[in-house]
Length: 257
Ligand code: CAA
Image (cartoon, rainbow, N blue to C red; front, top):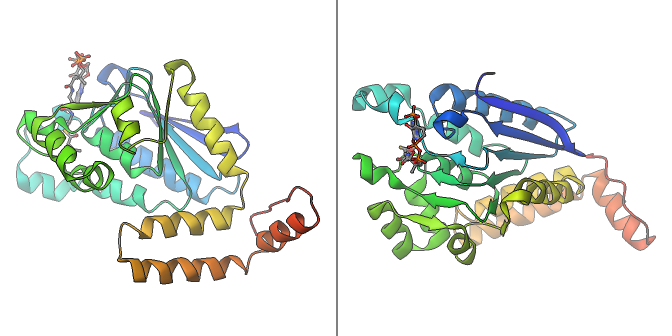
């Protein structure tokens, strides 16, 4: 792989993916996105990985889809390439993905961070959908996810002006989980990942799927979905172990079964 770096076991059962086009502020060209999709799909099948962290570097998580690659394209070219299909495939990942964001998370970069399940941001993080300034608009979920996260008024403002949202504002509006100094944002993401990686993996998967249903369906359907997944956890050995350990006042030993 040319534009992706993979490190396994940065913490027990935690794998790290780095977007690696620093000279281009990690702009998301087609090759990078397909490498990212392939790596995430591989980790989703990897028994030793329970949680995935995706990061860029201190200056940029990613400054958007690659403008140089898109510039001369027609609508028909874009339709045929259908580049956002890779985002859809990443969205289907069963294991939790944490985005560790520092610097620019713009356009497709902001959309990629929002496609992840949680965001740990450095104090320098800047989120935005500046596509309007280059004659287009968000295409990888920005108008939908940003609106759900920030509410209509602020999302509309950002999408129509291209202004950036500071890390602090992103935190106060619930877009990110936590902001920390730039020196430790990756460590902080690892800590969160490690805590989740120590939980029973099948319950984690079913719980993630259930939370995500809240964005897809109405309350009644969502409650039914959640309840079935709850009952399903009672087929796992980890549920027996977890409840038994609680009663015996000992630490559970989860085995992902
Ligand atoms: N695509 C391609 N190249 C990019 C890029 C992008 N999205 N963002 C930055 N780069 C490149 C620059 O062209 C430059 O390359 P060269 O050295 O070869 O000229 C290099 O990265 C460094 O960038 P700057 O010199 O511009 O750095 P800066 O610190 O002065 O500015 C910035 C940083 C404000 C983020 C600025 O680079 C910028 O505005 N980038 C574009 C942001 C943007 O519009 N993103 C949306 C893209 S479209 C999209 O994402 C559609 C979608 O919905 C998926």
